[in-house]
Image (tube, rainbow, N blue to C red):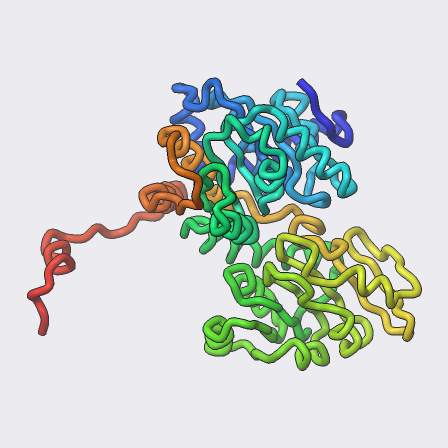
Length: 416
Ligand code: ADE
């Protein structure tokens, strides 16, 4: 068994974290219990490119207990929990490739270490493993299918499919309702505030927070910062979302105006060059900038470095940039997704739903091995089943339609 991690001696701390997380992953725990007896993934090799966290650990352990050979690499150079990686290697005997703070070269080397295994299934977060497999087709020959965890990855894969270049079927786990309505909204909302506070420890009440992007993540972030007493401004390019943000009670304006007003800026658009030197020049002294989108392209760090005369680390995850004109700005987690770079990502109970979608989507691909290459939605029965199981695990009961209601709702004759 080969691996590449920071320090295997960290495993005891990692073990405690993974067990604690599992207590909050009741749906995944049930799936593990139900499917590990039949070893439903026996004889398969699954390559995962995910944030190496305690929640991911519980997914890959579940896959292994269900019979798979699992290979795990990081989906971001700054999100790996080194103690969790150590535990997976030491006690769960899973091949892990990733260290917090790895270089770009090490990051792609680790992806290669997973990619080269003649994989049957792939679980990706952001699309880097799948796109690497498309650049090295010889490694993709045995792939039956893949799943994609996040909005950015799904967009990349749909672009690949549109160009008819996609080599195998991929299930867009991100687009399941039990994923984006909870993980993207409540998970990113809470973990972004968490990362922000761990790195800065500043009071949010009374601050003006500019959130760029009002997708599901942006909505969650806006709601949580607002709940902490911040005045929230939204910037958007989509008129529908901008309208929704307005009626949700937030200020909406272009970034050129918001730049002058904000104390804190969080990007969450999935696009590039959202905050560039042009916007920085309009900002107040002392602003704090962070990114909650998947890739570190939303804030133009390179451009900022070019107008910087001095850079100092202030705290873990927080750097002070003194610009050539004397203004100071502060950047969280090197502009990488701050909820994972400065904190531990989404809480376990929300990842429970995301990773149960991953598990059941892989099972679906295994049971349907001849799907043509395309991007598929998670079957709605899976989505509904996860919602049902999650509610049950929370001890929440709901009503059922009566006979008369079923008849009414399926008729067209009955009106006033
Ligand atoms: N993405 C966001 N939060 C995460 C977590 N806790 N584990 C894995 N992937 C994540």
